[in-house]
Length: 137
Image 1 (cartoon, rainbow, N blue to C red):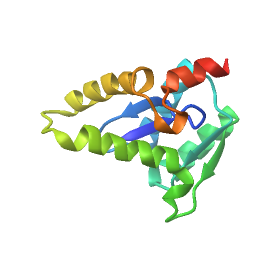
Image 2 (image 1 turned 180 degrees about the vertical axis):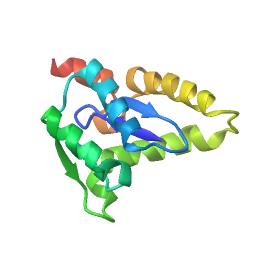
Image 3 (image 1 turned 30 degrees about the vertical axis):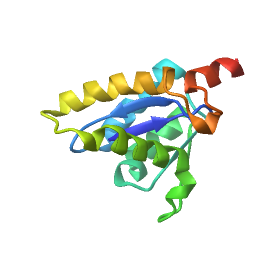
Image 4 (image 1 turned 60 degrees about the vertical axis):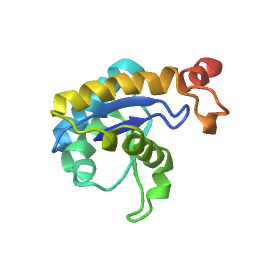
């Protein structure tokens, strides 16, 4: 899974599911998020091969986006997405036997909406990511 999180309000902006997620898929997923939310100034990510590829770096440079890579072996530097990944695994991904990737993607999309709009986030004081964003506007 490739998960995109907004650090400000902890909203899930995208969840991409597949057996392999090469840099082209990462770029496509990020472009879809940008169509909806606009271009970020910075993307923080780990040093996975899909993130450090020349294609992703060139794409980010063309977009005017700075990439901040966490230090290898320091997942706490990307704590929000690491916590989100843990929540995904514990709340639903490892709880079911899935029939297909399409089934997982469909469930992820529905769950993402619930996570952003209905599920209180204790780190945000018990409000949802959507409420946090609305209060900032």
